Length: 354
Image 1 (cartoon, helix red, strand yellow):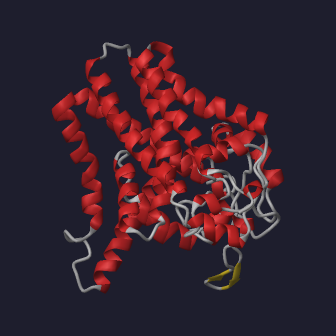
Image 2: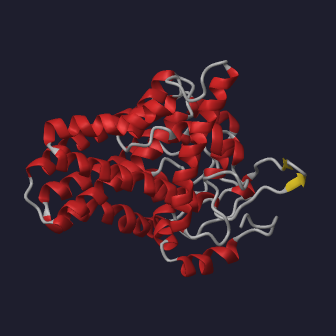
Image 3: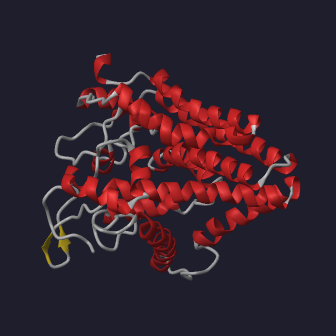
């Protein structure tokens, strides 16, 4: 396989520097507790500017070979173990530290940047896999941020409904990131309840009985927080839940960027065009793609969800973001500036969802 078309497996281990940097910063304390956030939202955009873009795409034959390479999968499991260890250590620190409130807040943000930016990205990758044990590792990562139901909503909901008004994870043109996050979290949660109820009705079971997995997925945060609280105290439990909330809010902010204002045209009443590269924003910046396991090649992920991250390709038809996801998430926090930058880059197409 020509290495000029792919990123070597060991290169992805650079992504482990994010949890390590966050860990070192929190162990150091004081303003250094913000080191994880600073690296994620300032460092990575700077590296994107320095390193530039990666336009390489594996061809079909290379992609098949890449998907079968175990070496690309090992990093995902190494990260899962590292995140679990990191959270255990953070709970211990939170239970023994005598910090001011802002130090706790910075530490929660730094850990949330890790578990949301990197952890949920890897969980998302594993949620698409056929092997039950790979999905299990993904569920463990999602459980650590109190967002297990995301796996079902994303795979069975978002991938089917992307670009349509009833998709919670498609941001409407003109919608602010703040309104989107509230809407997406609430609608996604309700949507999974309804999907589970429909599944059980089709099996002749009670739609909202104990076989509805949302009961169990909703109880996981309570169970984990209770366990953390019993060992490390109530403050550690609340901070654990706080990093999870930061993580899934960050996830939804990324969702906002991925499909903002891109809609699928209605061919005839109730029938919509198929998803195409023009329905997802793409960012080819090498540094952030390395840390996000090429999530920013998002159109190709939607076109072939079973394709593993190392095999994802770029698409000329996809609208291009001017920076990687970390910088674009920050930009979205200022809606007028976001609209000024993004709206001129939007492809001409069907009417917006608003």
